[in-house]
Length: 95
Image (cartoon, rainbow, N blue to C red; front, top):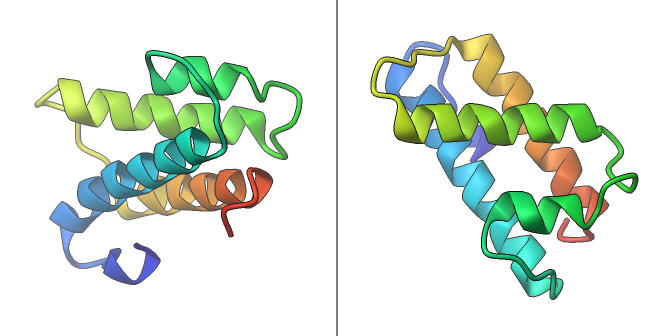
């Protein structure tokens, strides 16, 4: 996913955030966390995230991108979200 993020390809910003969020959710499910939504699964790890604010902000950004057609992000914001998702994946032992 990190390799797909291209500074000169604005479309890649959104795609990478959506894919990274999906990957983290898959890791949460594989770890046996229950809940109807990813947020419910994430809440079960409260206090265990290395960067809880970052992973929550990245997930909220994903939600905005998925549900609001007017949202645009820049390269740096998408890069920061990927860093947070990557740390989240490390926190749950997926990488």
